[in-house]
Length: 112
Length: 183
Image 1 (cartoon, rainbow over the protein chains, first blue to last red):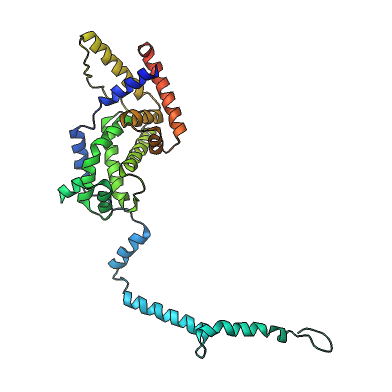
Image 2: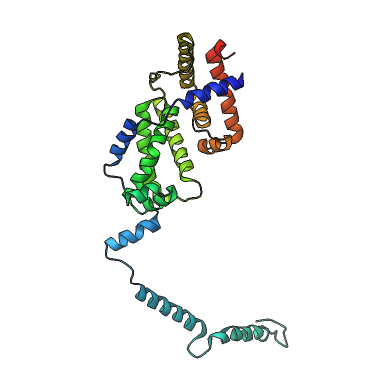
């Protein structure tokens, strides 16, 4: 019984050809009109907006700015008079001196 | 350029469409619109609505092209768009007039047999039209598109089990509608 139904359905849909040429032509004609704007993500949309506003990024200047920022970061970390790779060592010395800072008084035993 | 577009694979045309290439989009539309209309007509059972859905589906292809990722075949994605648009439309409209069934040509030698086959076809056509939307969509995708249950499940955004249930129920309803003819 199911085979007969399968046969009938297959025969029914086999007779339905793809949409006729006139229908397809009508749809194609409608599609020739002005197409709507494409949907792009913000990342894709933003450069176009910036370019429209003459705010296109000047990459050499961006690189120079990034380099200055990086230099400022390292100078801030190490100071003018120290080497960058010495920075950690100096902190290590400071931490080892903590026992001296918090050493109890000899007479009272009180801690600062 | 147009000849190149006509021969290029869907994914290439889609990539060019994403870049705003209208010629690539039109080549894509020329290739798929007839099939989209046939699929939409199978689900909606109405030629005018099918054309509207085909237009809307192709406009979605255009507008969504920049976001489209080729993780699945273009055709499968388009099929899903069309099925969703059809089901949405049926949900909104609720009812659409039944298109007159076309003449059925049967190879049966005698007129009585031809007439009987024609009647059977018409009854089946009406019965398919009366199926719930998702059951009809499952039938159309399986028997018209020739999709497997897994592919139908993907197009309907559901599970294979659910598709099997839809098909069983649809065929049961069609059997009841056709009555003695099917026995």
